[in-house]
Length: 369
Image (cartoon, rainbow, N blue to C red; front, side, top):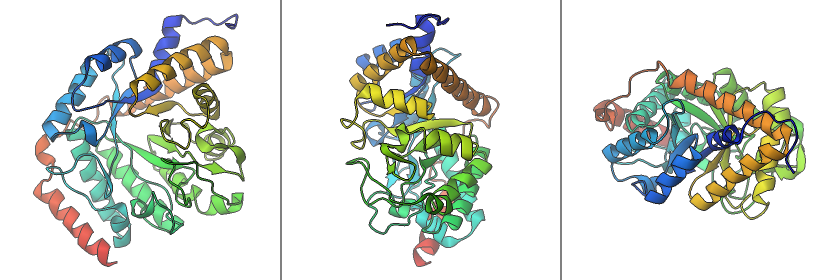
């Protein structure tokens, strides 16, 4: 049953629902099915993976074409996972960066800033607006199968210093940074792509370790933060962080004072996909304070999510209010970074001699530390 008294139209609810989705594509070109989806849903952004990459000029043109499919007043935020090391979607002929552990091992924040700035220039040259980096997890569990050398350090304070330096330098180049995976994926022994991890720590331990780098990222003005599909029983025994108001709202929004955009991790990961009904995922994550949902591959699932987000607004005034707030934060992020920033770099910055030399230095010095 629809709630009486809602004042916005179905078109408004559809627009808001679309803006809360960042979606992936199947291949290196936009299919007709994907074009139809984009015209109907008008997603807030796109995320590209290795399957979408042939070479840098093709990626730049694909990003240009994606933006051209949407109204000028709703420019998409085009995103990528370009961390360096194991997680680098665009490789040669772009610079192949070492893992961030090598950067952290060097223990020179000026070098961290140089790496972040160079990464930002290459990402922006390829047409992206946001890089899902840096990893703000503390690599505190040697059995962790998914973080490891993606983290700057196994020490919270050192991780925090590098995270803050990375965020400041990346965003100074006009590329939005995203600190991930809140409140911390570093102490897990399970990969959330495959199952639902649990971190059995008490609040003082979480405060002294996991939250330290995220505090630093927020103080550095980070544009966005991504949640973890991980359960923290000290705060919420029943829900992963992405769906937990006790984690996102109470810890990130209220306690740490973060007012920017919160992304979910990919909603197709097995930590959540199939474990909870889609409607429950979207309803509870929205109530928790998640603004934008990543739907990285399956177009059918993304369309179901859009329809569900429209319907939830119709049925629940609280959900509609939360959607209004989420879209406002998304718009603020656009205004901050997409207007008046540095000009888009030329593709010639990719694997420039300066970048190649920097990567080689970090690889050599960091591996020896």
